[in-house]
Length: 307
Image 1 (cartoon, rainbow, N blue to C red):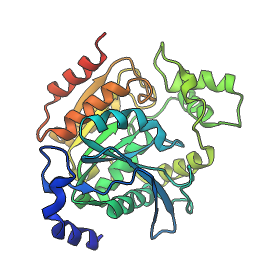
Image 2 (image 1 turned 135 degrees about the vertical axis):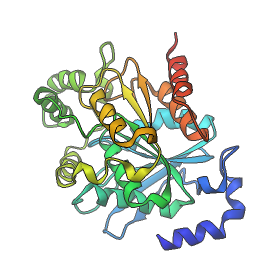
Image 3 (image 1 turned 45 degrees about the horizontal axis):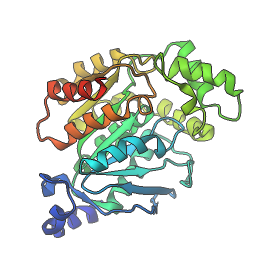
Image 4 (image 1 turned 180 degrees about the horizontal axis):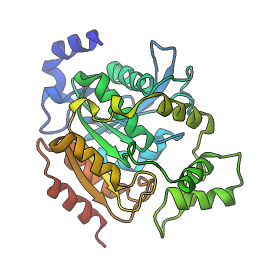
């Protein structure tokens, strides 16, 4: 990572050319890779990554056993707002390979290697569901790389009820459990009432999900919970049974003013296919403003959801 810091100094004169309007060199700049590249890590993993858009960079980390395509709608919206989305596939998904990670920090190192390959300066990072844990682990272990952290469906403190945990497992069991049963699981664990769970029938990687769950069990929450002191945005879905609002209360207790909290109505744990426009508005406001207020971000979300 030392080479990355040196590059940041040497490249300072050119950063403004590729950042969004109003960005400063300290906020970072990343090389575009719309066609996709493979990034080799020191741990022996190969990570498939592509970028979408140009401008201020945000690196996205997907949910348990799922890939980067979940962010496509949000990333396309952000591209119109002057942001570059960095979309990496976790190990075991869509071309990314590697040994089974031992802890969340192994996956955080994958993210750091991708950022080191493409970027100079600090960047934003967003994690969805399981990815929120990796995002916080990344910010904890590599604070020099991170400007702000966005958490979508940010759990980790409140225990998941047994019926919801069983539905989560069933949802991820693509090819191993009948789709008719999985639809019921998806509706219970991931989707708010009135939303179609069939949009997530596919796109699951059960073996990758199992490996990721093993890292959760092996990594104490206290080691990544506060994201190393980085500024945090938590987008709390109003109907999320996997990461309910008790997690937000616990995070506020532990980090105080470090946290900006907004509520996403008519959404559950899936969140991204349910309310992509509102999420994009929230992320653009948070990462695009130097000191975004909670009230302003909540207005952005509410406006995006208005009929």
